[in-house]
Length: 261
Image 1 (cartoon, rainbow, N blue to C red):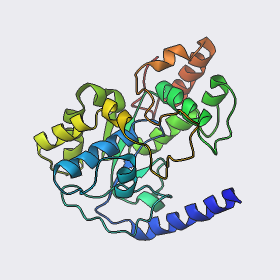
Image 2: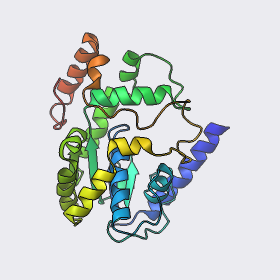
Image 3: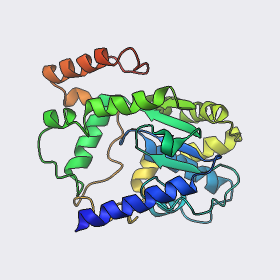
Image 4: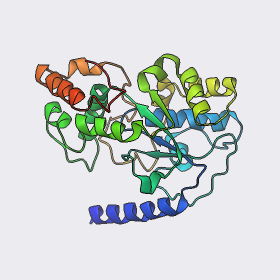
C-alpha cells in the first residue's frame, strides 16, 4: 500500500513538473550523495544573506524553499529575486523534463559516492538493501555504473559542471565561476558569506526535522555523515578497483570528467 501511494505521489509531482517548469528555472543535478544537498544549503544561505529568506536555515526550510522533481509541487511561485529558482534532481537527463533549461551538474569521485550512498542505503527505509559493499557497487540501480551513466547523460548538456572536491578546496570561487556560466550575477562577498555559513560542520549541526528525513532513517544516522575525500581506500579491494577501472575504460570516450584510480 505504501509503495502504491508513493507511486501515485511521484506521478502527481511528475505531472506538476511538466506543467510547472519555467524557462528561467535552473536545474541542480547530481547522482545521489555527490554534494547536491550541500550546494542547496549554499543557495539557501545566499537567499538568507540577501535578506530575502525570512526563515531560519534548517533542513525543513531547505525542503520548503528549493524544490525537487518528483517530490514537490513545481506550480508554486518562486518569490525571490537574488536567484532564479533552482530545482533539484537526481534523474538522468531527459529532454521531456529538462528541456533547454540551464543546469548545474555536481560530480564527485564515484568511489567516494559509493561509500556514502552505501551507508545511506543501509540506514534508510525503502531501500531494502542488506548486502555488503561489494554487492552495492555492482548494483544496477545504485552502483558504480549507474553513477557514471548519470554523469554521462548530463556532461554535454549541463551549462556548468563543478567537482565536489574542488568545492571543498575553493568553493566560493568555483561557484562564482559556475554562476557566471549560468548567467547569474552574484556579489562575491555575498556568495563568500553564504559559502562560509554552509560549511559541512555547520550543516551537521542542523536539526534534521524535515518530513523528508524524519522517521525514514535508522536511529543515530546523520544525512550529513562525513563528506571526506578518498574514503574509498578503506572499502575497495583489488577486485573492486579492477571493476571500477574496467568501467572507466568502457565509458572513456564520453566520460570526460572521470577520476583516475
